[in-house]
Length: 138
Image 1 (cartoon, rainbow, N blue to C red):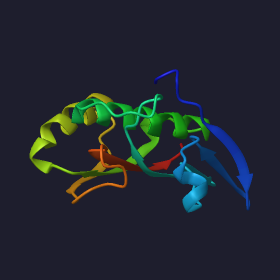
Image 2 (tube, rainbow, N blue to C red):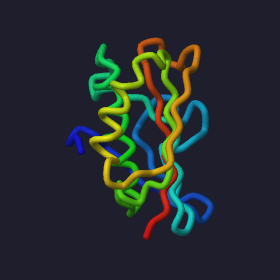
Image 3 (cartoon, one colour):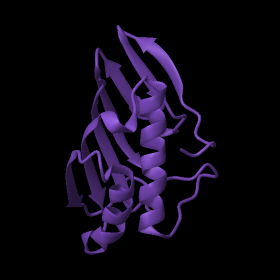
């Protein structure tokens, strides 16, 4: 996991909520991830770097997105191996192999259910991928 990802956790309405400090979280009223009981839901997460910029590489954006997803899961007491499903939204599905390579590096032995779907665009024009994850903690 990248060392430059800062996740804070708070209790809200009997749930634990993780925040990555994204400008969109308070604006849209959501958390990076929410834990209720043994279930963690991770919001669609783009691969933005700590400096607020995106790598031009879809593979690197995928890697960064998964680092942020993993940090949120860990902050809520889960582990990457607890992931049971990922959903990936990409702006150019013809580059799916770049995504698959990185996803496979992270989840090769874990083998969660997964979906990859092409979308017209994401909320940030430079974002090429957004990843969600569902987690059941042991």
